[in-house]
Image (cartoon, rainbow, N blue to C red; front, side, top):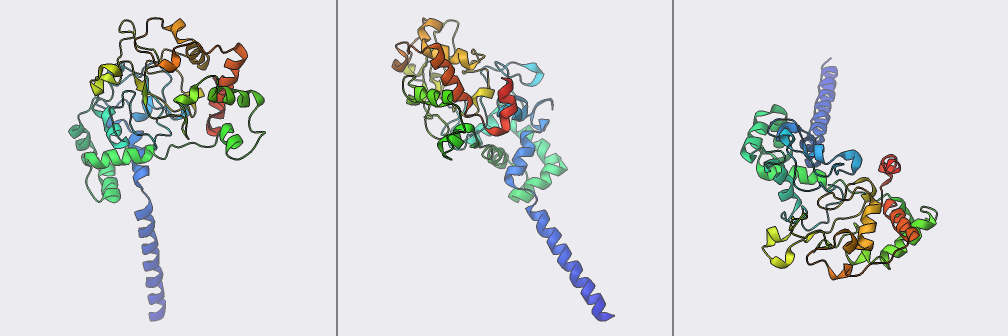
Length: 318
């Protein structure tokens, strides 16, 4: 009988230890960040979350020219994708955030977005039993600004994609993964189109700021990078975006003025035709490219081939 009781107690202790181990491993920093990313608790009126503007089905970008914050207040710039950001060296169109952690907190405080003072946001999290427990579990601390930023940034760093037809062609050596027009388009993108002067690397961005000719101080008044740097020569410069999943992140540019990839390609083919009075347009765009209709279509086919397979249905609807 005694042996039987000791055996039962031993099994019970093992079970408790296993359950305890599972519980300790149940929530990671990334998982906590995901919960926060999708929770409207971080907006003033509990109506929007990070995911309201960074829509998962559209590569964590928005589908409108500019997003709307609390009380339906319109933002100032187009919402870029929150995917494939782990290698970036600056954030937002004007580069005002130096890392993902700084970026993560900015929309919460922004009066045009979530409009919630940071201390009030932390107070909500501290008073929420679930989040208080999770922050303690992940960080061994009550909710703090540092740990809030770390959690959201950690989740955003998981949003990487590398399973597109282009990847299968170029990096898996599958010549059948893309069509001939994609292959022609990539050659044009790398050559006649001059696109790789700014769009190169694993995410097709040089992480720099360029003035492509969408600033004229009249109807196009956003001076971009100069608002941060204070340098006159930076007027009209904006961050070069990555191109992965670009086919499903319309509308395009910092102001969302182009609704389709074809409009973007038409602009680059002859910027002066679209914005004739641009100030300090980059010299790379000084002359028309002279692309034919077929060449434009081929470049678009290449850009569409950068869409991760998880978004195939969305891509085919665009």
